[in-house]
Amino acid sequence: MNRTITTSQPSVNLIKAFFSLIKRWSQRSRSRKQLAELSPHMLADIGLNREQANFESNRRFWN
Image (tube, rainbow, N blue to C red; front, side, top):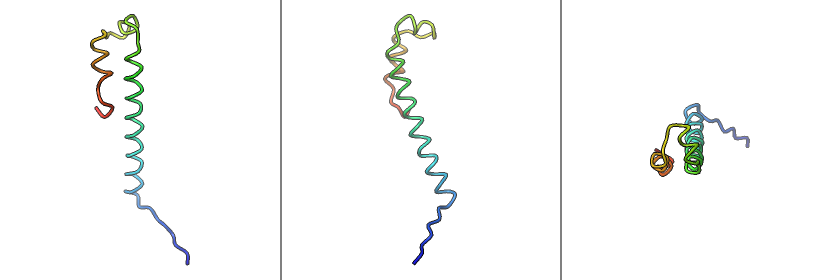
């Protein structure tokens, strides 16, 4: 008995969207960790102070 599994286009799009969302969350988490590690001088270079950097780096990855 041969069975062929076909995946509908909406299912494929949903899976792609899911993995895209996971990737975006991972990038945000990584960026916020790096921001938390910047020195005051480096923060000044990008126009932030420690308080602003702490606020941003403490946000949840889904925000």
